[in-house]
Image: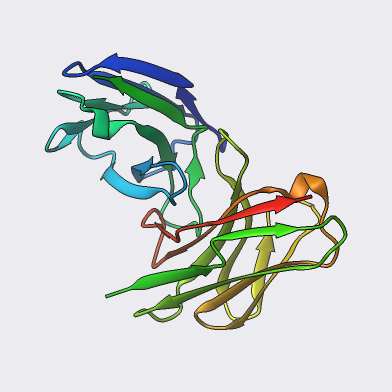
Length: 112
Length: 111
């Protein structure tokens, strides 16, 4: 029940295309869903986050879509650029806990 | 502003040697602190977390230990390193659930 399942494991997208990464969770007590971006040799950095009271959040080219009934959320990267090539982690947390649960990560490569 | 420092950046240690990795946070009080390990091309494995001085929660039984001697200091240790301890070690802090800030990591190679 604590797991966050992320797919795909790796993804190759042409420059200018849309990158989509999906995550699913079981624990309905989760109330915070962040996405992290990690470049090689660096620590992950918070990219964008959403709470379950909204179905979508957009920041620039990055959008989180949230489906509470399906217990799924996804990251969409519009007009994908080579600089977006990185590993992306979805995560889930609930307010009473001290830690968050990470997905297994998606290695995204944007081809020029 | 808050900053997190983690060192060293890279480390090569022989099997059986001790380990000490240090992480410090500046600009905040009573942070939650975390140690993660990431194997090459793999996900983030939570090793330890701490919600206060002297309070350590272990997530995975292993050859490592953690200590929090001061409010903003978190130390990862081992008495005798194993080959399987190689990996990318990340320290992180948060003021609450979800808002993690990660350090720049330590690449540990056990030879």
